[in-house]
Length: 306
Image 1 (cartoon, rainbow, N blue to C red):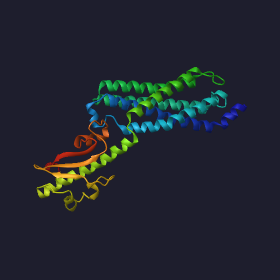
Image 2: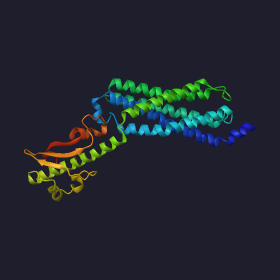
Image 3: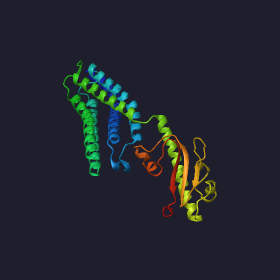
Image 4: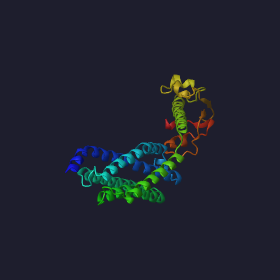
């Protein structure tokens, strides 16, 4: 009777523990899946990756951040739950334990369904069979580990004072999987410095794109290219001083008008996008391919395009 009262007094606390562990579990599981999917996307190239279904360093960075925050939280909260179960503070038949464990099973089932539906949809949309199979296997394994763990836990007969080896196997097995995924993610993802340099280079290419459109408008109005980029500022409203220089170094872009509506734009780039597989760089890579260092990119006026 005393134990029951004590359990009831702690019901709100354990409800908080279970809900927080669920949130941490979702972030951890999805992040491991994201890492696995992005590694598959990176090392199994696919032509349709150019349409936004390829490797994404942005997704990989989010997964790394989520693993750093959510994984320790999940294992810490889970330890508190099972420590209280072991001591009998949280009763085996407690309503909060049963309801929230089955709720976690429900969420795990929904994640499995969502992953499989998404993967089958991508496969029917033309994704490579090998990529589909590998992603499906990864999704099933990750989801099955979470589902079977909680299903086993809620069906256990003896809990108080009992050290369960199966629980230990799940604990260390899932921890190894998470650590391996985290290490692989760190090996694949670009460093913060590289990410910053790539974004700065993309800002340069955004300026190039603005200048290119300005040159097209200028040519359509005057039937010739300007001698210098300074002429664009007076005639083209959307081109200003900020578009004509590197925003980080304040170094002006070089420009050279050539024959047959051709021209060059030059700048000093920090990175190379020639071999960049990231989906966020597809537009820049196709229109403005460049290597690191001083690069001059040839373009031409397409009158119909403006």
